[in-house]
Length: 435
Image 1 (tube, rainbow, N blue to C red):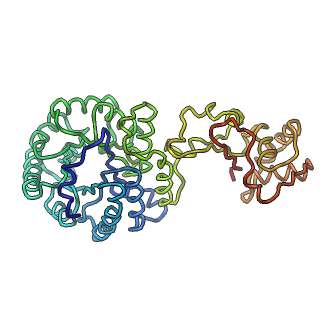
Image 2: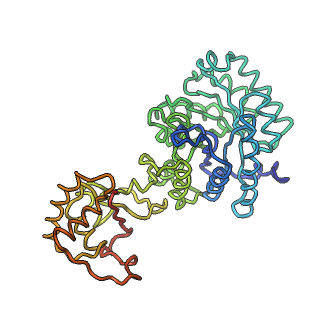
Image 3: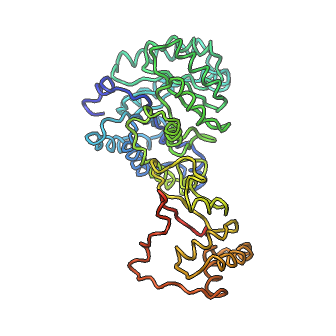
């Protein structure tokens, strides 16, 4: 921690929406790491991801407490060095430790120099019976006494408290716990730890918490077990949750949580521009690619801020998109770093795309009637594609060997710089062969 850091949080004026990114904590629990025999983010991975998050505009990053493993302790030193290098350029970023209400977790995080502690303890009957085994009175005593000590001895630390599994905790029981800790913390968490919440339940819970604790900031954490993490997060923000936990690409335990860029993209679509203050939106797709590269995969199709969300395969769609992407892309992603559409050659491609590919991309001398004939032959041939072939190879063979088409001679320096004829389009189309 830098010498000035005890005063940083007092000076910081929170924005309308503060992302608390937990890619390096919650995201480390993703089975996607195991799918590729990676198992954990390397120190170099963590440094690159943190650097990308800070440049993007994230001010709060959650990490494991050093108690998790000696490796986490070693990695934290490197992570802090990245943060400190960027302070002059991007301002202060707060590193928060995810800690149980347990003295060992807390002391390890404080000794390591974290800027804040994200306390949690299970409050649902499931946690009481099958987790820590403590009743509600014990939970209250353990949480309050530990947080009181931290606030007395380390008043500069940012402190959040969450009743883990809050959405399976009856409201009156959650209030019993929160009533005891609310004078001691900067914000209260409302985690949907196992993904049971619905948008209506989120709205009710957030409104109830805001009514009971009107001066207290709330923090959301929504899992995607029902596929509702994003809409639940949006509902929470709509009803006054200022801090929202996210991960890149929504990775995390089981089905993960809500994606940072998906959340910000939807707020942009809904014209909640005040919630976007300070975030480098054009860096959204690049930062998704950074995380995807660590998982040895592409940006997945469920992520709105992805090239897949601007990729077209059906022939009818391809024809229309060649004229204007808005025909099948209702929301522009250009401001989020996805600056082109992509068309994939394949068995569903129509003659318009065949014609476009042959003439505009490969410089064949071809008219529309011949393109239609080639398209018929291509559709028959492509279903028998070999493992080492691509649709483009099949199409090129048909054009040259069976239809005898001739190609224009384009000087080498200009072959990769040919401007396509669709100059009225606001964004370019990239045509790939799907191979």
